[in-house]
Image 1 (cartoon, one colour):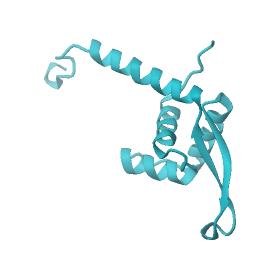
Image 2 (cartoon, rainbow, N blue to C red; image 1 turned 180 degrees about the vertical axis):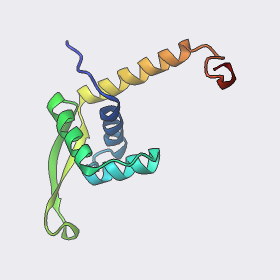
Image 3 (tube, rainbow, N blue to C red; image 1 turned 45 degrees about the vertical axis):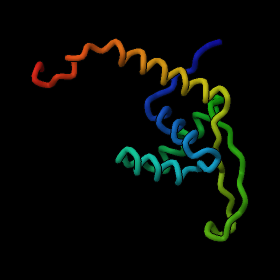
Image 4 (cartoon, rainbow, N blue to C red; image 1 turned 135 degrees about the horizontal axis):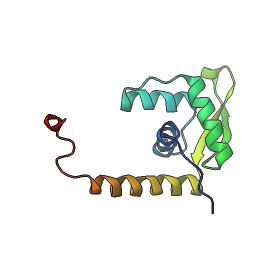
Length: 112
């Protein structure tokens, strides 16, 4: 099976969707990324990434119930698919493997 490339920001959004466990929509993903990373992202960037992740098959979405706080509009909720969960596991394993290959002194800033 052909692997689909997952960019760093896509990985971050996908991971946050998994963390939010069924409660992920554009605004919550944006707020949680900002809270946990200090990285400020626009809703447009989040929405574009959510669309790309859905096109790649890493997430699926469904409309939630209408709420008064949203003027009766429904939220589009995102969940990680089996393919997306596999991609996250693969990324985690690859990063762990690469970190284990790192020499202990390579991050010593006095050596630079």
